Image 1 (cartoon, each protein chain N blue to C red):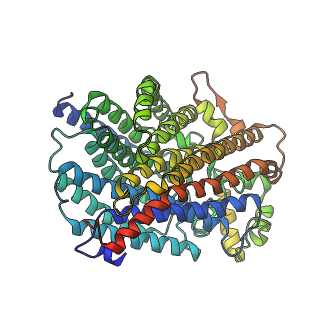
Image 2: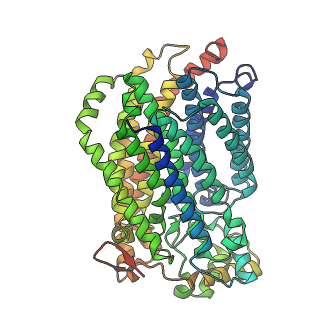
Image 3: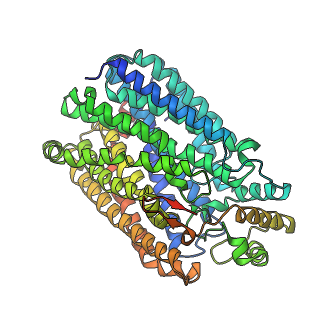
Length: 133
Length: 451
């Protein structure tokens, strides 16, 4: 049986490693000095307020009932997004959003679109099992 | 209930009872959500999917938390052979959690959300959870007294409680503009916290099931063994560093992918151990299979094997790029939450509630039927999701993609199987837990078994 001292040492080392990694990640976020306009920020709040993520995904994370919206802005364009948000469809309710809210949500999707590509076909698979965008 | 939570008569059993109610509620909301997949627009105005999904997720996650808290508090008392440090702290923890869960479920019904992916609710409602959890930690630490010469399940419980507190708090960093001012930064930290949070309640569940296994077999040696501690540290290592597999496709730093990929491969050690110990666990299973609680532990063993194979595959970025965002991820989430966590916790529920006030013998057939119905329908449910995921993956990778709605329509046969097996699963679990409720009701009216 391992002595208690060894268990405490392993546990402490793991905790130190975890806290250091967490601290490093907090201080080295993937995007430094981001520009997030008021409209985009309000759009994100609206996205959360209406729980859009229950049905839609961003980078493949979210619900499965609706499509991934990461690059919807560049794929379908603002007009189609506007129409969907205005009327809903068979599955999606009409949220009776105001014109400014529709614009803010569209701005948020534009901002998400500019962060990268979520389409898995755009990834390169390396021999060691890793992937690159 | 009032009688049960009154100062003199409060026992951790009420956590288990509320947990079982939440499990049933969660599965009911899951069934409604499943219907919304196959009947587009079903209850669209009254209870649309953005409400049913969090109602389902939160009910099920609170089932896990309530059952885990009940298990830890009950087993800790048994382990130390003494009363808990403070029954009042446990009672306060219970009240705070009941307030939270009721407020959260009501908030969803009124369309008030937190809007985060996975586990979301208005941030203010996390306050009673954090306060309650701190009380849980205090009660646990003082009741245990020392970590010297303790079995592995005490380490697992302590780790689970501490890391849940850390990761749950971390999941609210988005409230600070520094973390919330870019979608990639926000998602990076969000999935760091969620990935580890799942590992933290797994520690509580696995610790409880290990205690139960020790109790059933009457052999304490494994809980003190080097092997048990090696596997515990391997699990802790994964809890801390393997969360990156959730965000392989997010444009974040490459080292997140490399670290997570490497760490996840250490799970092969756990898989190897399962395969190596298969024969021994089979012998043990045959010996104890007639015991109600043990039956669920055996089922969980099979589900651990199946889901671990799936999880290790999904942790390889080159495979993950195909499975990410598809129903294979859902199969993994459901397989682990129902097949592993729920089966283990049901074993614990059987052990804690069991036949204290009425004999469960007349219900043996019903319970066995419920057990087999739940597990066989879960298998069909799991396979249907994997099949739907494979087809969605094929669609995602196809060069001439058909419309999303057409692809979803093509998946309808799998969603129908998923839906029917989900209903059967609900029936199976309700049949399996019904005698436990009946027993507790009898206890309640006879005021037996209160302490």
